[in-house]
Amino acid sequence: MRIGEFRVSLQCLFGEGVDDVSFINYFKHSIMALHIINHPMIQHKLTIMRKKETGTREFRELLKEIGMLMGYEVTRDYPLKNVEIETPMQKMVAHELAGRKTVLVPILRAGLGMVEGMLTLDPTAKVGHIGMYRDEKTHEPVFYYYKMPEGKDRLVIITDPMLATGGSICDAVRRLKSDGYSRIRVMCLVASPEGIKRVQSEHPEVDIYTAAVDEGMNEDCYILPGLGDAGDRIFGTK
Ligand code: PRP
Ligand code: URA
Image (cartoon, rainbow, N blue to C red):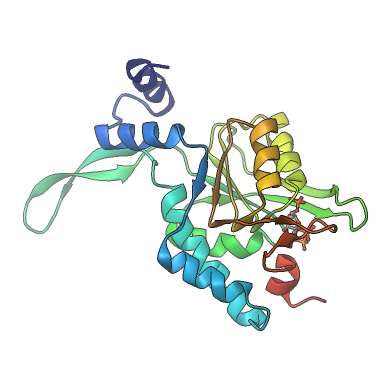
């Protein structure tokens, strides 16, 4: 697709008022499907989370903070529109978010840990929920809950700290697509190369945001070196 065509399709999505900065951000974003967010603050916090001696309270707090920091990247290409406002000094043209509110969709349970941080950044976002857990023997996801707000044209951001085999994310994306959603992003914390490959091959249009790509997985499909069982570490189970 050429740049001119790209601009036209962007205007179809967000209307005539899209400004040049939004256009360039969206264009840059769309040619990069895997976003590794290696900001020093995020990497430092992730290292503390990985340590086996880090307790539930600190782990949960750090995940919330990282959720907010990663949110800056995930929302970087959000379109803006011009609005006329008046400061105490004079009138000016300022910027305001354009388009419909985003839907954050945590995959239960561990995905919940990233939602609060994202909501700190974007308090008006809607929140859907997808419930699934991995069967301990087959490692296949088992689906148990689905609830989404109205508005299939909204941008959907799936949150789940661990992208291991990719089975859970792929099933979640499939379910959302079959329900009519087409603008979907994935925000995780640690991903395996196998999981990324699977999501990219089954859902090539879905952008993945992660703070780390680890070495691989063990025979139980846990990420190595990873950080262990994210759900258990967030909620203090086990
Ligand atoms: C974990 C994690 C992902 C899934 C990743 O959830 O939070 O949802 O495993 O694995 P996959 O990429 O191989 O599908 P888990 O099944 O442990 O459920 P929980 O969050 O309720 O603990
Ligand atoms: N789920 C987790 O919580 N951790 C892993 O390493 C893999 C799946």
